[in-house]
Length: 269
View (cartoon, rainbow, N blue to C red):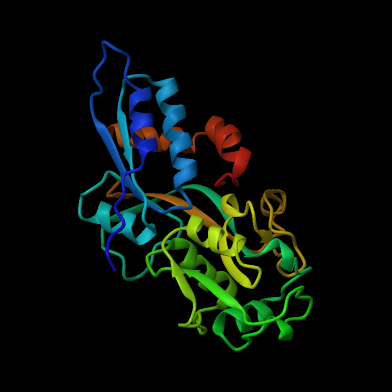
């Protein structure tokens, strides 16, 4: 698989925010990785630059959790953003610094607003055992089920497999694999027969299906009721130092967790 290393325009805007006319940033914090973590890390970077103007520049790209973890392990970036936990096959020396928690929602088209899906139903649908909406209790459409999933580099894909599927079941190879949450969101929003899974922040235009009788929303994730919750990490090679440590400490501070993080995510503690 080719590495989607697109540097986003937002990174330039973030960097520009830190630079008064007469100031020069001392260093650049390079970040890459999870498309789920991206909206949060850009907010954290902007808040950091507001508090410490001119102290640093940020260059942020996305492409999946495995990309970020691989980049930081190879010293290509300072921080790898990951929405999956440490795995046994990851390179040695990595430190996973938890910054938040969020949820993964199973989503359908709004025309197919299913009242609830059990874990068994999710497993049957995504494994390919059930291939038609006619065979799904509560479905509002008929015809074939169009599966949309994430690529292997995705932390959301890893979380979905661990939380919803279990390690013994695989997603059907016939599923259409998408490189980002946004692409899954767009595919499901435009297709009444589609189903997929996305991060909390990418449900607009789709219908977030209640899972195990619990609505997939931030309130239920914070209360502990919603079972589809996973961790967000800033991954470093060794313990963070210098400006990288200062930024991560800022992101993990009670003030930031209680304001920026808590507004749209679950604080990590």
